[in-house]
Length: 324
Length: 315
Image (cartoon, rainbow over all chains, first blue to last red; front, top):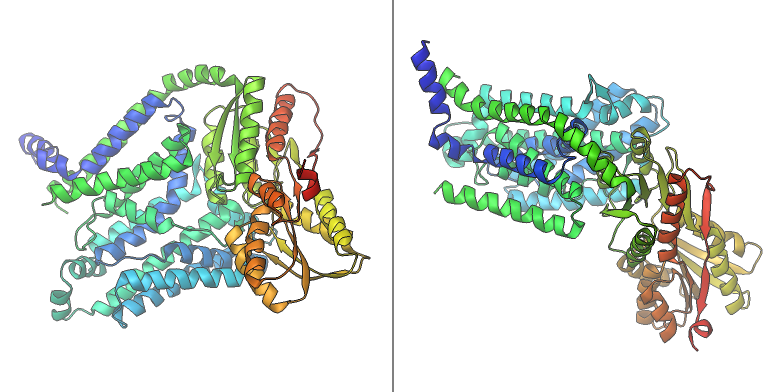
């Protein structure tokens, strides 16, 4: 490609349409600049690493949520899956199971739990909102019953210290959960953009009846996306349990809201079929920085809820208006 | 993907990354700035409280704020909303802000261990308030003598029931040192007496939960004569259940919050073992001051309790 073509293409990259499309990234940058002026502690390496590490849990759940929302569904049960699978992981550690076994079985359990929602939605033909609202409550109840309302310690097992590196370890100065988050995004990007499943997911979200009529097994795709969401919630559960060295029965409460907010802020449409996984990354970072900034600025926790809600409302309004 | 698509896709991401790197290169100057800021923040303490939804902890916070003002400290207050993960996030965020010391009121004593370690690694001393942390290095633990308080409640019940009868205990959040210690104090003091604990269930220091739990326990144990709730919130919930069941049962609370003391005044609650929440907060700040001045402090700094009964309250 010659110079002129390259220049043209690069200029096109920053054209007005693209700038509008990437408003979330621009918003993120503006936000970061503003916060760094208000709070000097914001732009330290430590704080940025903190933000990345704290966002990793929401990020991983949000990836699963992206898959689900792309099919015009929703998964409210992610927080409860996180809690229940976290409790299972802690129990297995207490039984001295090896790290590999603990992680593999926990992820599998998450996938199974997700598939339960998926089955209810696909075969039972129940609306995703209702179905996952029910599974959210069911699984939270199951977690309470299983844990007897008490935290389960992930401490003291033979492999507990190995397990703790997942949530608290560093590699080359960067927290391990950040690597996990990067890996999850890379894999998701690949699946959504370079595999048949990815294409079917977009097709299903765009027009379900057309997809079904073209002979694609829509039920299996739904099962797959909810299973993915469940497995990723379990991965998030592993990280949270590892960070606290304890599985809390109330873990993950309201995490679904942050995940959905991240997906929406990233430009994925709730009606399905439209959206980029990298948009979710931007959404996750916006929420992560927002949470961090509110803490650094010592905003009362009551106002923090209001601030977050306003940001999300604003983003969704801008998004709806610009796509009309 | 074609080159065009790739450029479109990666351009904003690369711009974002480039901007981030440029800005964090400026962080060298920002770090110098923040060192100056840290010098300004020389007198900053942080209070990480488990939840501000419980009036007890609101009193604790206010006590701490007042004492901090007296001693010339700035107090940053963060609310963990009863979530240990949130608590850990709060502590991490404090480590980049240059606070001198963290006063921690853990949501869960076990899960707080890792959070304390994070503060330790950042070289920030930690003083725990009301609940302990099972891990990491603590400069001091400031709390009411919960064991003595539980015993106070037990002795009162033995007295009022003439050493005969059945009693229910409503426990706090399982795993917290407060719940454990009050329980131990109560149960130990009842050993060797003729009072029988027929049921002891957690109601998580929560009023609504206590209402439900008490309703169920009263169904199962209709001859109960007294209820000991490990905090006033639960006692107030238990009172509602007792009223609904139309029984004559002694209810003893713990904490001495404003509503609790009010209930004792009106006769709804028989008594409460008053903690001085504000005093715990204030003592915490005092101990923090001593730690920062390099003075030796006790591992456990107890704060006195006061039994409040109807006679005590009425003039």
